Amino acid sequence: MGWLKGYVFLLTKRDQVLTEDVVQETFRAATAAWGRLRELEPRALAGWLYGAATNKTHDHFRDDERERRYQPAVWQRFYQPPQQETWRLALTEAALEQCWKAIERMPPRQHAVALLRWRCGYSYREISRILGMNEKTVSAHVSKARRMLVQEVGPYLPFDLDQPEGGASS
Figure 1: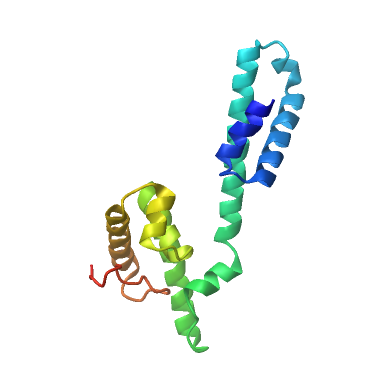
Figure 2 (figure 1 turned 45 degrees about the vertical axis):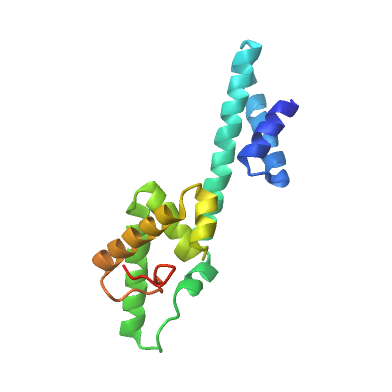
């Protein structure tokens, strides 16, 4: 079953520990479903294992993303609350919540670029390598996302949207 481990290793972006976990969970699921699976032909069984491993990998990435999304350190990284004026603090929290909701509604590629830029702090070049797109495309997605946030949230944004790389303004 080294073929399954190799497949999962690529899916997990070469994370050995996660690969081991996913393969183990896949076989645990196969054991639980053995009543149905034992009657499958070898090719169909292999297909089931590939599908289950793919789903388990996606579940891990989804859970990991949810966990990172709500870490307190992430919130602190994007904005510093104003002096203890409660009305400003309330506005900041409301604007931040509105920003994240707007980012969640963005088209998938724009959403990914916005998160990598403003949440993870990656440069345009790093984002282009991660997502496999041209730097100019990354810049265009960042500009569109910036305009959308300003339009939806208003000029009072709880974190710095930065300016386009190279000094141009959008």
